[in-house]
Amino acid sequence: MIPFLDLRRQYGDIKDELEGAVLATLRSGQYVLGEQVERFERSFADYCGARHVIAVSSGTAALQLALLAAGIKLGDEVITVPTTFVATVAAIAYCGATPVLVDVDPRTLTMDPEKLEKAITPRTRAVVPVHFHGRLADMAAIGAIAEKHGLCVIEDACQAHGAERDGVRAGAFGAMGCFSFYPGKNLGAAGEGGAITTSDDALAERLRMLRDWGQRERSVHELRGYNLRMDAVQGAVLDVKLRYLDGWNAARRRVAQAYDEGLAGAVERPSPAGPADHVRHVYALCHPQRDALRQALSDAGIATNIHYLRPVHLQPAYADLAAGPGSFPVAERYARTTLSLPIYPELTGPEIGRVIDAVNACAERLETTNPPMEMAS
Ligand SMILES: *Cc1c(COP(=O)(O)O)cnc(C)c1O
Image (cartoon, rainbow, N blue to C red):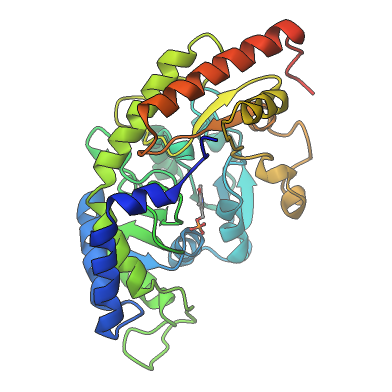
Protein backbone atom coordinates (compact mmCIF):
# COMPACT_ATOMS: atom_id res chain seq x y z
CA MET A 1 0.00 0.00 0.00
CA ILE A 2 1.28 3.50 -0.78
CA PRO A 3 0.32 5.39 2.38
CA PHE A 4 -1.49 8.70 2.12
CA LEU A 5 1.15 10.15 4.45
CA ASP A 6 4.02 8.53 6.36
CA LEU A 7 5.69 10.95 8.78
CA ARG A 8 8.25 8.34 9.84
CA ARG A 9 10.05 8.89 6.54
CA GLN A 10 10.74 12.57 7.28
CA TYR A 11 11.76 11.75 10.84
CA GLY A 12 14.17 9.08 9.59
CA ASP A 13 15.83 11.56 7.20
CA ILE A 14 16.72 14.08 9.93
CA LYS A 15 16.63 11.82 12.99
CA ASP A 16 19.96 12.81 14.55
CA GLU A 17 19.34 16.53 14.30
CA LEU A 18 15.82 16.24 15.69
CA GLU A 19 16.81 13.99 18.55
CA GLY A 20 19.71 16.29 19.44
CA ALA A 21 17.41 19.32 19.58
CA VAL A 22 14.77 17.51 21.65
CA LEU A 23 17.33 16.12 24.07
CA ALA A 24 18.90 19.55 24.55
CA THR A 25 15.44 20.92 25.35
CA LEU A 26 14.71 18.16 27.86
CA ARG A 27 18.03 18.90 29.56
CA SER A 28 17.41 22.66 29.59
CA GLY A 29 14.63 22.54 32.18
CA GLN A 30 12.64 25.15 30.20
CA TYR A 31 9.56 23.47 28.74
CA VAL A 32 7.15 26.23 27.74
CA LEU A 33 8.16 29.22 25.56
CA GLY A 34 11.77 30.22 26.44
CA GLU A 35 14.90 30.22 24.32
CA GLN A 36 13.98 27.40 21.92
CA VAL A 37 10.68 29.01 21.04
CA GLU A 38 12.24 32.48 20.71
CA ARG A 39 14.87 31.13 18.34
CA PHE A 40 12.18 29.58 16.17
CA GLU A 41 10.12 32.78 16.26
CA ARG A 42 13.08 34.75 14.92
CA SER A 43 13.88 32.24 12.17
CA PHE A 44 10.26 31.95 11.07
CA ALA A 45 9.81 35.75 11.07
CA ASP A 46 12.88 36.06 8.79
CA TYR A 47 11.58 33.27 6.61
CA CYS A 48 8.13 34.83 6.15
CA GLY A 49 9.36 38.41 5.83
CA ALA A 50 7.43 39.64 8.88
CA ARG A 51 8.78 41.68 11.81
CA HIS A 52 7.26 39.42 14.44
CA VAL A 53 6.23 35.83 14.99
CA ILE A 54 4.19 34.84 18.03
CA ALA A 55 4.35 31.08 18.58
CA VAL A 56 1.22 29.49 20.01
CA SER A 57 -0.26 26.08 20.74
CA SER A 58 -2.08 25.39 17.42
CA GLY A 59 -3.27 26.92 14.17
CA THR A 60 -6.70 27.29 15.71
CA ALA A 61 -5.18 29.25 18.61
CA ALA A 62 -3.35 31.44 16.07
CA LEU A 63 -6.64 32.29 14.32
CA GLN A 64 -8.49 32.90 17.59
CA LEU A 65 -5.78 35.20 18.96
CA ALA A 66 -5.36 37.09 15.67
CA LEU A 67 -9.09 37.85 15.63
CA LEU A 68 -9.04 38.89 19.30
CA ALA A 69 -5.98 41.09 18.76
CA ALA A 70 -7.84 42.76 15.87
CA GLY A 71 -10.59 43.60 18.35
CA ILE A 72 -13.20 41.21 16.90
CA LYS A 73 -16.09 40.81 19.34
CA LEU A 74 -19.75 39.93 19.77
CA GLY A 75 -21.90 41.40 16.99
CA ASP A 76 -19.06 41.83 14.48
CA GLU A 77 -19.11 40.04 11.13
CA VAL A 78 -16.03 38.30 9.74
CA ILE A 79 -16.02 37.05 6.15
CA THR A 80 -14.40 33.76 5.16
CA VAL A 81 -15.09 30.74 2.91
CA PRO A 82 -16.90 27.41 3.34
CA THR A 83 -14.10 25.51 1.54
CA THR A 84 -11.72 25.20 4.48
CA PHE A 85 -11.01 23.18 7.58
CA VAL A 86 -13.70 23.87 10.20
CA ALA A 87 -11.18 25.68 12.48
CA THR A 88 -11.27 28.86 10.37
CA VAL A 89 -14.96 29.32 11.08
CA ALA A 90 -14.77 28.00 14.65
CA ALA A 91 -12.17 30.64 15.58
CA ILE A 92 -14.52 33.41 14.43
CA ALA A 93 -17.33 31.91 16.49
CA TYR A 94 -15.02 31.64 19.57
CA CYS A 95 -14.79 35.48 19.54
CA GLY A 96 -18.56 35.82 19.61
CA ALA A 97 -18.53 37.22 16.08
CA THR A 98 -20.73 36.05 13.19
CA PRO A 99 -18.93 34.10 10.45
CA VAL A 100 -20.17 35.23 7.02
CA LEU A 101 -19.32 32.79 4.24
CA VAL A 102 -18.74 33.55 0.56
CA ASP A 103 -18.20 30.98 -2.19
CA VAL A 104 -14.81 30.22 -3.70
CA ASP A 105 -13.50 30.75 -7.22
CA PRO A 106 -13.84 27.44 -9.13
CA ARG A 107 -10.41 27.87 -10.76
CA THR A 108 -8.42 28.38 -7.56
CA LEU A 109 -10.72 27.12 -4.76
CA THR A 110 -9.87 30.28 -2.80
CA MET A 111 -12.06 33.28 -1.87
CA ASP A 112 -13.82 34.92 -4.82
CA PRO A 113 -13.06 38.66 -4.38
CA GLU A 114 -16.30 39.71 -6.13
CA LYS A 115 -18.34 37.68 -3.68
CA LEU A 116 -16.35 39.17 -0.81
CA GLU A 117 -17.24 42.70 -1.84
CA LYS A 118 -20.95 41.85 -2.11
CA ALA A 119 -21.01 40.33 1.39
CA ILE A 120 -19.65 43.43 3.17
CA THR A 121 -22.09 45.15 5.56
CA PRO A 122 -21.67 47.99 8.09
CA ARG A 123 -20.91 45.30 10.71
CA THR A 124 -18.06 43.66 8.76
CA ARG A 125 -14.73 44.06 10.58
CA ALA A 126 -12.35 41.51 9.10
CA VAL A 127 -11.77 39.09 6.25
CA VAL A 128 -10.03 35.72 6.55
CA PRO A 129 -8.93 34.39 3.15
CA VAL A 130 -7.70 30.77 3.23
CA HIS A 131 -4.68 29.67 1.17
CA PHE A 132 -6.45 26.40 0.42
CA HIS A 133 -4.30 23.33 -0.32
CA GLY A 134 -1.24 25.59 -0.12
CA ARG A 135 -2.28 27.96 -2.92
CA LEU A 136 -2.26 31.68 -2.16
CA ALA A 137 -5.63 33.40 -2.37
CA ASP A 138 -5.94 36.47 -4.63
CA MET A 139 -4.36 38.75 -2.03
CA ALA A 140 -4.04 41.78 -4.34
CA ALA A 141 -7.78 41.93 -5.02
CA ILE A 142 -8.78 40.98 -1.46
CA GLY A 143 -6.34 43.51 0.03
CA ALA A 144 -7.69 46.32 -2.19
CA ILE A 145 -11.30 45.59 -1.20
CA ALA A 146 -10.38 45.35 2.48
CA GLU A 147 -8.54 48.65 2.35
CA LYS A 148 -11.47 50.38 0.66
CA HIS A 149 -13.84 49.20 3.41
CA GLY A 150 -11.43 49.48 6.37
CA LEU A 151 -11.33 45.73 7.08
CA CYS A 152 -8.53 43.84 8.81
CA VAL A 153 -7.06 41.05 6.64
CA ILE A 154 -6.06 37.90 8.55
CA GLU A 155 -4.57 35.16 6.37
CA ASP A 156 -5.38 31.55 7.17
CA ALA A 157 -1.97 30.32 6.02
CA CYS A 158 -2.25 27.02 7.92
CA GLN A 159 -1.68 25.06 4.69
CA ALA A 160 0.69 27.48 2.94
CA HIS A 161 4.09 27.74 4.70
CA GLY A 162 6.45 29.30 2.17
CA ALA A 163 3.97 30.05 -0.62
CA GLU A 164 5.16 33.17 -2.40
CA ARG A 165 3.94 35.69 -4.98
CA ASP A 166 6.01 38.60 -6.35
CA GLY A 167 8.52 38.13 -3.55
CA VAL A 168 5.94 38.23 -0.74
CA ARG A 169 5.39 35.13 1.33
CA ALA A 170 2.25 33.77 2.98
CA GLY A 171 1.79 35.53 6.29
CA ALA A 172 3.18 38.85 4.99
CA PHE A 173 0.18 39.95 2.90
CA GLY A 174 -2.37 40.68 5.61
CA ALA A 175 -2.18 42.49 8.96
CA MET A 176 -1.61 39.02 10.44
CA GLY A 177 -1.00 35.52 9.10
CA CYS A 178 -1.94 32.33 10.95
CA PHE A 179 0.02 29.10 10.64
CA SER A 180 -0.53 25.57 11.92
CA PHE A 181 2.31 23.17 12.65
CA TYR A 182 0.08 20.14 13.03
CA PRO A 183 2.34 17.18 12.13
CA GLY A 184 1.00 16.65 8.59
CA LYS A 185 1.33 20.29 7.49
CA ASN A 186 4.20 21.34 5.19
CA LEU A 187 6.07 22.42 8.33
CA GLY A 188 4.96 20.12 11.13
CA ALA A 189 5.82 19.85 14.82
CA ALA A 190 6.08 16.66 16.87
CA GLY A 191 2.66 17.48 18.30
CA GLU A 192 0.45 20.57 18.19
CA GLY A 193 1.74 24.04 17.32
CA GLY A 194 0.89 27.28 15.56
CA ALA A 195 2.08 30.84 15.01
CA ILE A 196 0.94 34.31 14.03
CA THR A 197 3.04 36.57 11.81
CA THR A 198 2.69 40.35 11.89
CA SER A 199 4.76 43.42 11.13
CA ASP A 200 2.67 45.62 13.42
CA ASP A 201 4.44 46.19 16.76
CA ALA A 202 1.25 46.93 18.69
CA LEU A 203 -0.53 43.82 17.41
CA ALA A 204 2.54 41.73 18.24
CA GLU A 205 2.54 42.99 21.80
CA ARG A 206 -1.17 42.24 22.23
CA LEU A 207 -0.71 38.76 20.78
CA ARG A 208 2.17 37.99 23.16
CA MET A 209 0.03 39.07 26.08
CA LEU A 210 -3.09 37.22 24.94
CA ARG A 211 -1.28 33.88 24.53
CA ASP A 212 0.13 34.11 28.08
CA TRP A 213 -2.70 35.11 30.42
CA GLY A 214 -2.75 38.76 29.40
CA GLN A 215 0.59 39.44 31.10
CA ARG A 216 3.18 41.94 29.98
CA GLU A 217 4.82 41.82 33.37
CA ARG A 218 4.74 38.63 35.41
CA SER A 219 1.60 38.31 37.58
CA VAL A 220 -0.04 41.46 36.23
CA HIS A 221 -2.99 40.40 34.07
CA GLU A 222 -3.71 43.49 32.00
CA LEU A 223 -5.89 41.63 29.52
CA ARG A 224 -8.21 38.65 29.97
CA GLY A 225 -5.75 36.34 28.29
CA TYR A 226 -5.44 32.63 27.61
CA ASN A 227 -3.03 29.75 27.99
CA LEU A 228 -2.16 29.22 24.31
CA ARG A 229 1.65 29.13 24.49
CA MET A 230 3.99 26.95 22.44
CA ASP A 231 5.93 24.12 24.14
CA ALA A 232 9.73 24.37 24.07
CA VAL A 233 10.09 20.93 22.45
CA GLN A 234 7.93 22.08 19.53
CA GLY A 235 10.01 25.25 19.12
CA ALA A 236 13.18 23.13 19.01
CA VAL A 237 11.74 20.67 16.47
CA LEU A 238 10.35 23.44 14.26
CA ASP A 239 13.60 25.40 14.26
CA VAL A 240 15.39 22.32 12.89
CA LYS A 241 12.68 21.52 10.34
CA LEU A 242 12.35 25.10 9.04
CA ARG A 243 15.79 24.74 7.41
CA TYR A 244 14.36 21.96 5.23
CA LEU A 245 11.07 23.63 4.32
CA ASP A 246 12.12 25.10 0.96
CA GLY A 247 13.59 21.78 -0.15
CA TRP A 248 10.47 19.92 0.97
CA ASN A 249 8.20 22.38 -0.84
CA ALA A 250 10.28 21.97 -4.00
CA ALA A 251 9.93 18.19 -3.71
CA ARG A 252 6.15 18.53 -3.29
CA ARG A 253 6.06 20.66 -6.45
CA ARG A 254 7.96 17.98 -8.35
CA VAL A 255 5.38 15.38 -7.29
CA ALA A 256 2.57 17.75 -8.32
CA GLN A 257 4.17 18.35 -11.69
CA ALA A 258 4.52 14.63 -12.32
CA TYR A 259 0.83 14.18 -11.43
CA ASP A 260 -0.14 17.15 -13.63
CA GLU A 261 1.66 15.62 -16.59
CA GLY A 262 0.72 12.02 -15.93
CA LEU A 263 -2.96 12.63 -15.29
CA ALA A 264 -3.69 15.24 -17.96
CA GLY A 265 -6.90 14.27 -19.70
CA ALA A 266 -7.84 11.43 -17.34
CA VAL A 267 -9.28 13.47 -14.48
CA GLU A 268 -10.22 17.05 -13.75
CA ARG A 269 -7.73 19.06 -11.70
CA PRO A 270 -7.93 22.62 -10.35
CA SER A 271 -6.31 25.14 -12.72
CA PRO A 272 -2.52 25.38 -12.89
CA ALA A 273 -0.90 27.62 -10.28
CA GLY A 274 2.02 30.04 -10.65
CA PRO A 275 5.55 28.72 -10.09
CA ALA A 276 5.83 29.60 -6.39
CA ASP A 277 2.39 30.59 -5.18
CA HIS A 278 1.32 27.01 -4.43
CA VAL A 279 3.19 24.83 -1.94
CA ARG A 280 1.11 21.72 -2.66
CA HIS A 281 -0.04 20.83 0.82
CA VAL A 282 -2.81 18.82 -0.85
CA TYR A 283 -3.02 17.48 -4.40
CA ALA A 284 -6.70 17.15 -5.25
CA LEU A 285 -8.45 15.99 -8.37
CA CYS A 286 -12.17 16.04 -9.12
CA HIS A 287 -14.13 13.10 -10.44
CA PRO A 288 -17.89 12.64 -10.88
CA GLN A 289 -17.66 9.13 -9.41
CA ARG A 290 -15.32 10.08 -6.61
CA ASP A 291 -16.33 7.34 -4.17
CA ALA A 292 -16.01 4.58 -6.77
CA LEU A 293 -12.62 5.94 -7.84
CA ARG A 294 -11.48 6.06 -4.24
CA GLN A 295 -12.49 2.42 -3.70
CA ALA A 296 -10.80 1.31 -6.91
CA LEU A 297 -7.57 3.08 -5.92
CA SER A 298 -7.68 1.52 -2.48
CA ASP A 299 -8.08 -1.92 -4.13
CA ALA A 300 -5.04 -1.03 -6.27
CA GLY A 301 -2.97 -0.24 -3.16
CA ILE A 302 -3.15 3.56 -3.24
CA ALA A 303 -4.40 5.33 -0.11
CA THR A 304 -6.29 8.58 -0.72
CA ASN A 305 -8.11 11.13 1.40
CA ILE A 306 -10.81 13.81 1.07
CA HIS A 307 -10.18 17.47 1.99
CA TYR A 308 -12.98 18.06 2.90
CA LEU A 309 -16.02 15.84 2.70
CA ARG A 310 -18.42 18.69 3.49
CA PRO A 311 -18.08 22.45 3.17
CA VAL A 312 -18.42 24.13 6.57
CA HIS A 313 -22.01 25.35 6.02
CA LEU A 314 -23.13 21.72 5.55
CA GLN A 315 -21.58 20.65 8.87
CA PRO A 316 -24.24 20.15 11.54
CA ALA A 317 -22.51 22.54 13.96
CA TYR A 318 -22.55 25.40 11.44
CA ALA A 319 -25.76 24.71 9.53
CA ASP A 320 -27.17 28.07 10.69
CA LEU A 321 -24.59 29.98 8.62
CA ALA A 322 -26.34 29.37 5.29
CA ALA A 323 -29.59 28.22 3.78
CA GLY A 324 -28.47 24.61 3.39
CA PRO A 325 -27.48 22.79 0.17
CA GLY A 326 -27.31 25.07 -2.85
CA SER A 327 -26.02 28.07 -0.87
CA PHE A 328 -22.48 27.81 -2.25
CA PRO A 329 -22.56 25.80 -5.50
CA VAL A 330 -18.81 25.90 -6.18
CA ALA A 331 -17.88 24.74 -2.68
CA GLU A 332 -20.54 22.03 -2.76
CA ARG A 333 -19.64 20.62 -6.16
CA TYR A 334 -16.00 20.58 -5.18
CA ALA A 335 -16.72 18.71 -1.92
CA ARG A 336 -18.83 16.11 -3.77
CA THR A 337 -16.16 15.31 -6.34
CA THR A 338 -12.78 15.90 -4.69
CA LEU A 339 -10.18 13.25 -3.97
CA SER A 340 -6.68 13.88 -2.58
CA LEU A 341 -3.69 11.84 -3.77
CA PRO A 342 -0.61 11.09 -1.64
CA ILE A 343 1.83 14.02 -1.83
CA TYR A 344 4.85 14.40 0.43
CA PRO A 345 8.52 15.14 -0.17
CA GLU A 346 9.62 11.55 0.54
CA LEU A 347 7.35 9.94 -2.05
CA THR A 348 9.63 7.97 -4.41
CA GLY A 349 9.69 8.07 -8.22
CA PRO A 350 8.34 4.51 -8.53
CA GLU A 351 5.55 5.32 -6.06
CA ILE A 352 4.59 8.43 -8.05
CA GLY A 353 4.51 6.29 -11.19
CA ARG A 354 2.29 3.71 -9.51
CA VAL A 355 -0.16 6.40 -8.38
CA ILE A 356 -0.36 7.85 -11.91
CA ASP A 357 -0.85 4.45 -13.54
CA ALA A 358 -3.50 3.44 -11.02
CA VAL A 359 -5.50 6.68 -11.36
CA ASN A 360 -5.43 6.46 -15.17
CA ALA A 361 -6.42 2.78 -15.17
CA CYS A 362 -9.19 3.18 -12.58
CA ALA A 363 -10.62 6.31 -14.24
CA GLU A 364 -10.68 4.57 -17.61
CA ARG A 365 -12.37 1.49 -16.15
CA LEU A 366 -15.06 3.66 -14.51
CA GLU A 367 -15.61 5.44 -17.80
CA THR A 368 -16.28 2.21 -19.73
CA THR A 369 -18.29 0.32 -17.09
CA ASN A 370 -20.19 3.33 -15.86
CA PRO A 371 -20.40 6.39 -18.13
CA PRO A 372 -20.10 9.66 -16.18
CA MET A 373 -23.30 10.85 -14.62
CA GLU A 374 -24.29 14.47 -14.20
CA MET A 375 -22.19 16.08 -11.49
CA ALA A 376 -25.12 17.93 -9.97
CA SER A 377 -26.95 16.19 -7.09
C1 LIG B 1 -4.88 22.77 9.95
C2 LIG B 1 -5.72 23.96 9.68
C3 LIG B 1 -6.21 24.79 10.72
C4 LIG B 1 -6.09 24.46 12.17
O1 LIG B 1 -4.82 24.22 12.64
P1 LIG B 1 -4.61 23.33 13.96
O2 LIG B 1 -3.16 23.45 14.21
O3 LIG B 1 -5.05 21.94 13.64
O4 LIG B 1 -5.42 23.92 15.05
C5 LIG B 1 -6.91 25.94 10.36
N1 LIG B 1 -7.14 26.24 9.06
C6 LIG B 1 -6.72 25.46 8.06
C7 LIG B 1 -7.01 25.87 6.65
C8 LIG B 1 -6.02 24.28 8.33
O5 LIG B 1 -5.62 23.50 7.33
